[in-house]
Amino acid sequence: MTEAALPAPVTAPAVDRERLTAIGFVLPSFVIIAGVFALPLVLLLGVSVVDANGLTFAHYKRLLGTPYYLGVIWNSLRLGLLTTLIAFLISYPAAFALARARGALRAILLATLFLPLAASVIVKAFAWTILLRSDGIVNETLIALGVIEDPIRMIFTETALIVGAVNIFLPFMILPIYAIVAQLDPRYAEAASTLGASPVVTFFHVILPLTLPGIIAGVALVFSLSVSAYVVPTLLIGEKYPTLATTIAKAYLLAREPGFGAAAGVVLLGIAIAVVALSARLSREPK
Amino acid sequence: MMTRAAIIVCWVMAIGLALFLLVPLLVIAAASFSPTPVFDLPLTGASTRWYGRIGRLDGFWPSLLLSLQIALFSTAISLVCGTLAAIAIARGKLPGAGIFATALVSPLMMPGLVLGIALLQGFRAVGFTAPWATLLVAHLVITLPYVARTMIAGLSRFDFTLIEAARTLGCTYPGSVLRVMVPALAPSFLIAGIFSFLASFDNYPVSIFLADVRTKTLPIRMLQYIEEAPDPTLAALSTLILLGTVILLFVSDRVVGLHRMAGTSD
Image (tube, rainbow over all chains, first blue to last red; front, top):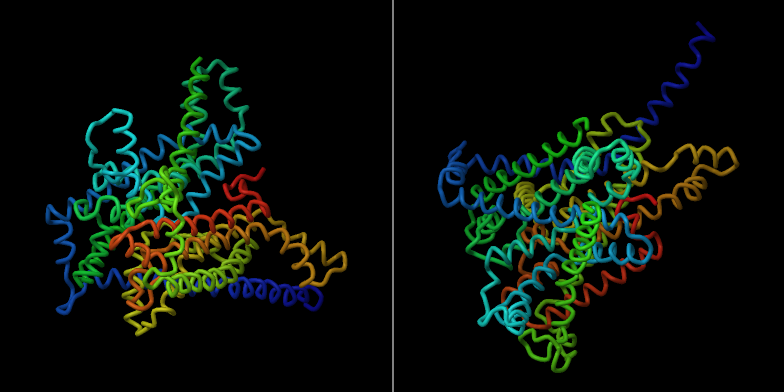
């Protein structure tokens, strides 16, 4: 009774104290995430289905039942899909070159990734508006080269939108892919070719599966950023390409329709959560 | 043969990507020296007069000051809260640490605009409407995920038994934390600070719903200038912001190395 039971009361409070300290450490962050992130999002869900007369789904009916707003949702998805696809096609091969680069070349290439990443989105979008104006540099260069005779309209077209979005979100695609590719053991590919696999087989059966976590991370990040982009479509295409993001801003800042804006926000949030859930599920699956 | 072709494609893509990413930055810098008000490239003669006009932009100084204040304060608070949380998560004594870690970084993947309107509704519902304070509190959610992500990653490589070792060798507890843990985590801390500062300083989608006529952050002001009357003064301002970013990145590269920010360990 005496000797055997003695250690227990000593260690138990020690464990408790460690756990209490841990809870104390996370408490401030928990308060911020719960109070300033989770709770307001739940409230937003409430605002989207409640009006002066009680429960209503009118806002969702308007969003999901009118061709105009279905087009708006499609515009957002299209912007996200095209940006993600093009960014991936450029980034994936580039990540392999970046992983092979050494010394000064690697430092320069990494700097060209980080500088635009750290630069303001508004500054970059503004730069594209200057570049793509009808009297802008792209047009004047094409005319000087004799490719075209009259300036072509580039700003406020879908091309301008996609070029700008790819430019702004590219670093978010290549960095996660590069992080995985840089850790790739070249002996896997060597082993595959030693065992008689052709380069194509080696790529699809060894390299691609091994780099999949980076691809999933990059695709999820770029899609969720571009599908909800606001500054880029506002400056590069404007009114004629309404997206969920521009619809939300309009509903709150101009039209004063918080219920409808909240519903559009919930739809956009749903897309973002679906992307996160899907990417988490895909990256958890065994290779 | 095929492998060589693939390697060439990789290099072409990498160099093309680097040039493509630099295009807007170079254009802004070039346009800021435009001799005329219509963004001519300074081929016929450069002018620096636009730099002198930045300070005269309507409402520029209060907006710059506001953005700097919000970015500095929110980063400082997030660094403290996020680092404490990351320590608790890394020590493994916290029930549900994995879920909480995911929750901490989840605002990164959520549309900023949706967070903005949610906060607008939430703050209104509790009668919290002072613009400066709402901006600061809102920016905590923007900066905290950057700190949490970087510090959790940094701490996952930190061996906590080193603190015990230092104490065994005669260090006091605060002394061992100061001399073992702080130097080991300093690079992560710096990277977390820089990225959360930039995320706050550049934020538009959340701030726009919390600002009022007299309290506008610099990005809100800049978008307003661009939509109303774009002239090379804005390019000059953008160039100065870029220059500040270059200096910040250069200094942090000297201190910790850029490759660490890319998430590789070598």
